[in-house]
Image (cartoon, rainbow, N blue to C red; front, side, top):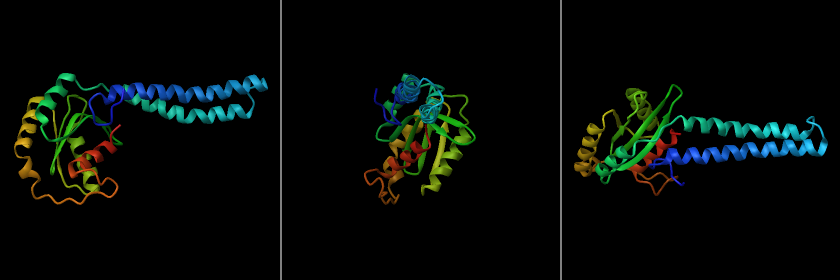
Length: 200
């Protein structure tokens, strides 16, 4: 299952991918350990040291896998409803935005000019915190935008319709110099890419 960050199905795909990587990373040091045990007949060898050190990246990946397993994918019906209303808007799905204080699950995020509109179906998501956090990160990266997290799907879909209707006038006078690191990305795509960077 291939799904890039920001696409529907990303969480399901990452659960599978990270599980297999974790198992592979643990298999390598175990193989080294048992090889040393068979060859030397003792645990007190350099093989054991190498095996223990080899467990460090495996443990890190295990934590990453656990964090992903704690996330539930967005509802298919929500995805289909948003797809039907997003029109030409730049959109990303299933983003777990991270901060030192807490995580925020956003079912969908759209970018239109200086507006970032997100939807979260999760009661645990602190909307005002997520808004301030994303706005702060984007400002640090040179984007002065407003960020709004909607808690009701109906209101979010109405906002998407409004953004689509006025998209040209909203984006009309915005100046943008392409980023030399990502010359192929539009301004809206670059803003979304920055949000991806702070997401699981």
